[in-house]
Image (cartoon, rainbow, N blue to C red; front, side, top):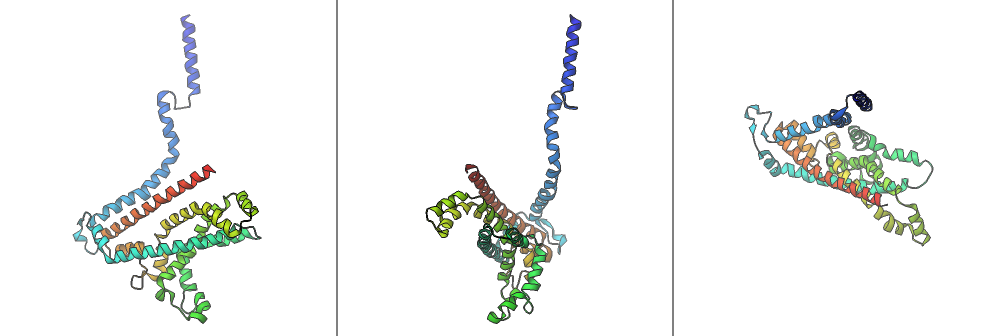
Amino acid sequence: MAKLKERARREEDDTAKKAAPSGESGIGGMRMTPWRRRAPLMPALIWVIVFTQIPMAMTLFYSTQRWNMMRPDQRGFAGFDNYAFILQDPQFRNALLNTVVLTVAAVVFSLLIGLGFALLLNRQFPGRGFARTLFITPFLVMPVAAALLWKYIMFDPVYGLLNVVLDPIFGQINWATSLPMTSIVIVVVWQWTPFFMLIQLAGLQSQDVEQHEAMQTDGAGKLAIFRFLTLPALRPYMELSVLLGTVFIVQTFDAIFMITQGGPGQSTTNVPFFVYLQAFRALDVGQAAAAAVIVVIATIIIAMIALRSMSQIFQVGEQR
């Protein structure tokens, strides 16, 4: 009888070992399973830590240092003096004002033009796919290449296409000198309008066609349908495009560097270009890092608002 019990116990143990995956038997295997599931995510986590968190930590450290590479012997701990100096600096305030003007103007025009293009591409017409590809092309061009394109082909005071078209009316215009901020806004709007258009086009294509047909059956005109049905349904997508576009446009650097170099008279110097000037022209690492931290904090605040807007869009989609 005892031999039969011992044999049954051995068979149960053999069955349990066969059922358990290799290397995961017993309690130890249960502990190892979650780590094996997380293992594929470790390279991405390490990449994020190495390329985002460590540089941010170093920037925070540098922002508390009194460090000008022209005077390396005077390096030391400065605390929050760099932040106080940056916030009181008239040039930083001017850069902050230019950033607000550039961002607001570019976002508003990109939103309105993008809405017009989205309404156009939402219609059925021959070659719509080809037209959609053409409309998103500016968004695919490298920012530096786009800035050079506008500087030498569009804004050139002698051979630029804009002057060729507008010369009979306004005469020759040196865009980069006479209208520097307008020139930068034009380039940024040209580059980011496809981004706004794609988000709003997605909102238009997600609307219920039956509601539009019902309003048309009731005698509503196109303007009334757009005002009372299309625009309210499109509002979350417009908010999302504005918030995400603001996060990206506030970091504009390429167009300013390639076209105006922040001038004339710092009229187009925004906060990212101000950070560049402090770091690579004035060689003041501490003040440049402090200005960069201020920009990051402002961007994080905008990004948090954008994420909330995205969650609201998802909630609206679930309710539908």
